[in-house]
Figure 1 (cartoon, rainbow over the protein chains, first blue to last red):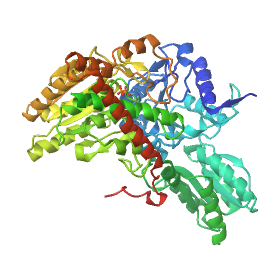
Figure 2 (tube, protein in one colour; figure 1 turned 180 degrees about the vertical axis):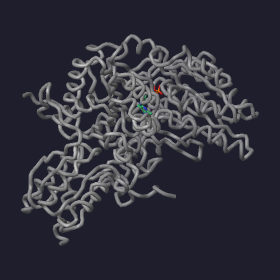
Figure 3 (tube, rainbow over the protein chains, first blue to last red; figure 1 turned 30 degrees about the vertical axis):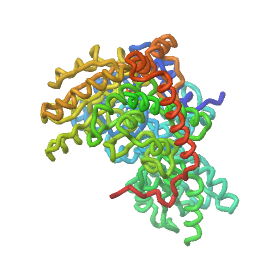
Figure 4 (cartoon, each protein chain N blue to C red; figure 1 turned 180 degrees about the horizontal axis):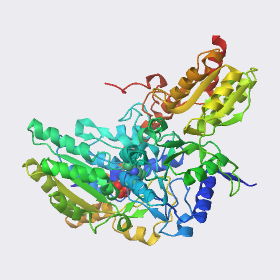
Length: 326
Length: 312
Ligand SMILES: Cc1ncc(C[n+]2csc(CCOP(=O)(O)OP(=O)(O)O)c2C)c(N)n1
């Protein structure tokens, strides 16, 4: 199987699902002719025409509301919000409507929509082009929140998201678009709600999402040299959370750290830690630390950005601190 | 008048010289040059007093210069240095110079329109005769914020000027494909305020239109909407890969370069001769060149200060 870039894997998922199912449509700012800021939708307007692939005006609230309405009427809309920082503008529609309608209508409608958002710091994006806000969304019952780390998961999860009958927030770290790997064929579906063990280990569990999975794998490699064998779990889906996977890993390793780029305070890592407290307390040999974004706005200056955004080194340090602490 | 020319050239030079530095890898992130739109920024700024305020956009460096913002401070900020106007925190998205009323750049389209109305609310409440002006692009008029801010400013009769820099393109989407009416000002009627179209490549026309809107605001007659028709010559940002507009179109607009046009006005009206114009140009180029060198030698922010300015 050919290796492809992360953004190509996403494009292939969109293309295959649109070929398969006429009810799938997509739109976003500059997603049409231009092919999207990160080239994910390149060529799709040419293949599917303007009735199914549209450029939208700079109207994030309406873009989201329109997806909800179209989904209620049987389409499977995919809406791209160019940078996750502006998901703030969509929040009313997402929180009060997309997440709520099916429940509020007693099951008499469904909202099968996907909201795709690039997220994360990528070097000099500053305060409005760098944020990771997945924890905000994870707080809302009724939404699913998905965050792949490899081309294969990107493709398989996006296909699953499109086929899902619920609103799915699909999060793509900008630094992953240029990574490559195999992405599977037409039938490659990755189920939503299933974490993945990206590296097996016996001494320690590192639980991560998105780009932090790659950093955790690099950390695990370094720690191997110290004879610390790390298991790296890629959550892949933040909601619903695969509790079984993390709990069973910790039962084996007895130690864990949780890693995400999102801000630490009230970040979804705190939820993972709480789950371990509730369901694996007796198996833990050390407190579970969090490696997360500093609780600071994300600065433009690269030396400052480096302090705020976590990475391999901070993961290594947290694992060592946990091991040395007991 | 020569001062207007000088400021337009300063804006142009900052864009051009920082683009060169970006290519050399000396500037992180993307740049959003405003080459071709200088007459709007400079004409508007000249029509305002120092104590008036402006808010701007991701493409706001020349707006900042028009209002009297410090050249070195903004250039250092573009390079992310500790002595930049945002101490390296905000980059070109957050251009600001409170001393001359520049308070509100943003990376979020539509993010600062209500903020300008808020400046105006403060002026109205405090009973002084200052005005606020909001710069924004044609793409921004489709945000909910445009509609909410104009309506609110109108019913509260706030001393604010909404100045749309219609440069025909919202990134890669042409105004004819994203706007529901022919002109942005067609919307003014719905919000109960005057709507004026001006040639955005004519610095004096912009100056006149903004001056009128400002006196209206100072007289307590409320907000105005101005649409300056102009054009963005370079890509939407340094990340632009092109392919959405024709070379012909760009060339047609290059022929209407606001700086060259204003130079011929100055020459024709004998306000300046070509020697004077050349020396203004040379001085502007030198000033920006020195600011760039100064920025390159300036320190990066110290990582230990990362939390500075998070809370007051
Ligand atoms: C809320 C929001 N949506 C989308 C973007 C991405 N974006 C940046 S500039 C831009 C186009 C803005 O067009 P316009 O308002 O005409 O200003 P111009 O760039 O032409 O100066 C877009 C869509 C953004 N920054 N903020």
